[in-house]
Image 1 (tube, rainbow over the protein chains, first blue to last red):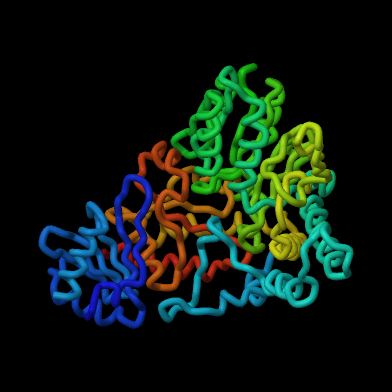
Image 2: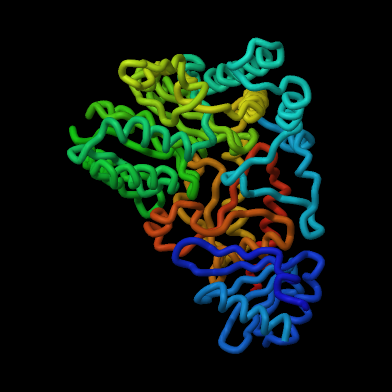
Length: 90
Length: 412
């Protein structure tokens, strides 16, 4: 069974007041991840294949062509996992 | 002047590509890249001389001990210390500062004393003092930083008193690159009979540092920021102060004798001589040898040349960044004569992490976040910043490319 661990290499939480979570997707899956995420989300702004500002439900986040994404104001890891599950697996 | 194009040939990693683009490494304040000479020195140690030091009389142990001691001497000369007895090898700047906090402050300070620290410090020069103050109750007084990031020397003078026992200050800010006037601070601290601990993590790799001229009582710095390997750093301390201090950790290497007194049913312990008294356990021998190779490399380039190269790059970068991107804001003073090669910046409408990831896409490595200096970001009223930091192998051409990418990011 495919899980989000098949797509995510690692996550980095930022320290301090900004509660950003940076998700680094597996390099060999980055194109598939981009395809899935872009298909599910609404594109708000972008610069030629490098940075995409996206909206999905009540979430706003940025996805990078290098296979990384920044999510903001998530409560905890569970919320991140459920968001990634919706974006990548459903 | 340095020739960075020639220097780059010594750094294998600079040949690699990231995301299909040539690597541009502008995160030197976090750690530097390593020349072949350092990598080879470590390899040669493990391939030809590896043994424990100061423990055996066999040939390999003697060779390893000689190399390790030679590394201490080389580092001592590099900062103009009196000798290896004043250069304790530790894991890095953080451990060096913790050593002073635990082996000096814990034993010598009480609730009537004060420790003076500035608001521009890296967390590693704040947290050890806050930790020990929770144990023995001394007060920590924080020196203000002006809106341009420079130290408020008047605030420092106002805080100093007979209660002050130690002043802990970075030589160069890891966020702004601003160089503090350590000679002036040493004079002020010593007038009150206080000691001065200098965090040299961002100065020793980039500018000439002479501990006698600075008159610092302690100087802490890391090998990995000055071309050396990770896991090795230095605590310089004046011999007379180190001799009076209690050891930091106990174990092998740091003792001369441990004899069991059958009547008292206790062990009588005699400490080893300096610097070994502070190097408990098997030390990072390969790291020390790698650091020696790094120091030799820097000495050959000349620290005045290193400083001049970074100053010229910083001046060029600051003007180029603002020319290329109207939305860029550089934080702190623009006066490059009092700065090392560090530029903290932001781009309107983007978080520092967005900026870092955008640049990463083009193979440009910069740091984002607080850089372990949250109080200084609070002074600047910033949630975070991006930081470009340069070293001997960075070029104007790399800065031109950096500018092009900033121009592109502006469109977002």
